[in-house]
Picture (cartoon, rainbow, N blue to C red):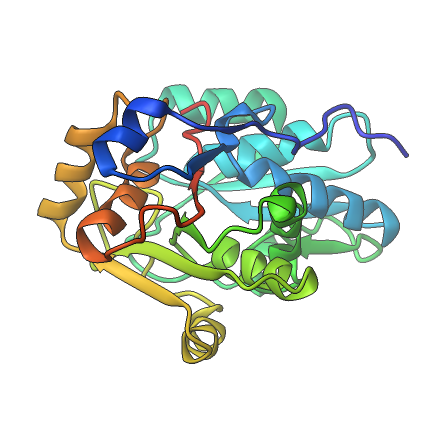
Length: 278
């Protein structure tokens, strides 16, 4: 079945003024903001919906602050899959209304009191005993594989380094799998935040992630994750927000140039994760 929307094939661009500013000659940006709904999460949405069609899933549940849930619901258009978006009670009314316009149902919960489990949400979403309900939450059904195509699209560049924002770690792990699949000698560097409950880079903080042990294993192989404090996060946003269309959670990748010394001729690809619609 053909989906209404397709992700991927985003541009790989070279910004000469940025190269000159940083003293690098092979610096590129993989601009994921050019996906249908402005974020590299569109790749996971497409992967999830295709998996759901193959497995005859009736519903997906997801906790969202807006972009991931909207993207998933849009990719489900034209299929028989229903998307249940769980949102925090404090979410902006405008975002909630946008989600209601594309979702089967939007359910408000209090995210400040507890960490909700997939089982709890699936139980709430299930309307009868015959429904097959899956969760679209990180780490459960290998959704990180949706990011492998980023590596497929850039593998011919044979980059020495790939720099990506790290929140839950899903994309970091997916890119790692791509590097292994295509047998690249590429070092993967993730950039996240130290904050667990709130950050100016609001897509990156997470109190818990199912990818924690996998990220530790990847780092043992020589890849890196850098964690920024809030002062550093805001400084990156201030310095680089006009270089490319992005948000604070994407701008953090630029911090690597103050943390790591790169060779002038090294091939470096920054992942602009995009900023979605909200």
